[in-house]
Length: 131
Image (cartoon, rainbow, N blue to C red; front, side, top):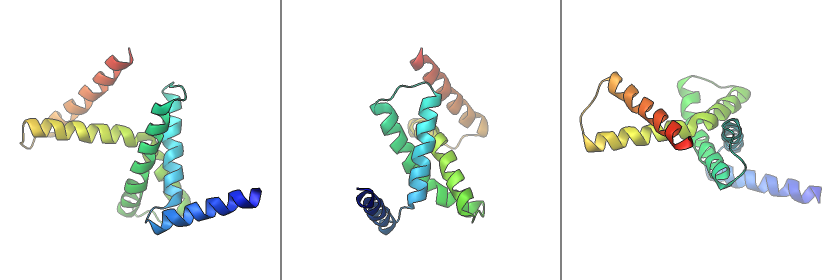
């Protein structure tokens, strides 16, 4: 039984690697997003599971970029970076979508004040939705 589980995990990791996905980033991002959902006080539901997959996807694609940009080569540091991105990945994605929506309505380059206003509006929208 244990050998079957280990063989499955190895096969799954090999599949992810062949698809260009670092399994460590995937699992660390999933764990980070899962922790974030519990910190927010949400109960186990499809929202937590889908949010965890979203955070894991952010970690899979953003961790290698940030690791290269920050010149991080240590495997443990890469895992920590993927965990952190998993925790904040959905918030980053929401912020980018809001910026894109605002820009689509008014396509001009704004200053940093306008960008911070968009992010703050996003925070206020989430507060209103949770009440």
